[in-house]
Image 1: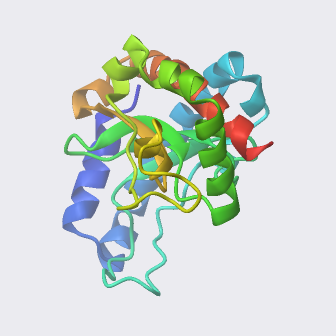
Image 2: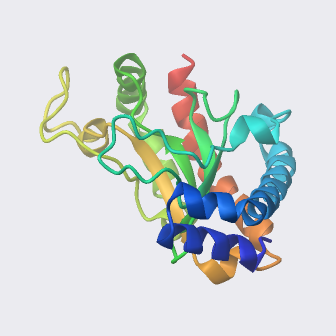
Length: 220
């Protein structure tokens, strides 16, 4: 579970997103960071038992910095108002599909994962895998637990069929996608309950066949 003070810090940061306030509340940030990293280690430990591919990850390999890169952004506030961690072979910088946990107050937290905006050669491989093995892919995403936790695949899509595919292809709705991600929303209250790690790992377990399908495509 996470401490309520961690969510409170992020909420207050959202109202005071400037260096002066952040520096004055640096001890609160350090406490929140340590709390989140403890959770990340617990998720690594549990996930390693479910998926050997991610065993051996270190917390620092998975967590994202709270400091924003504002060079190319219209929003010049210096800090993220969330904490995130990605779990995939090679850590957060990996190009392979992975699991993700996002903490953000106001009911914006979620457990999810997948493959977000892959480069063109990787996207081509994923589309080919879906086209060649659509019955298998369809079975994965129509599983009752998959639908219960995720509903459907989320991702920006092309308006027309991608090059090399016909509009009447049975898999066309998925072949148009440019990202292949799923997510399960979690309330602020759920994030501060003792069952949090167990619940997130359950979400990850339901997601695993989906990730393995994508990973097979990427590593082909």
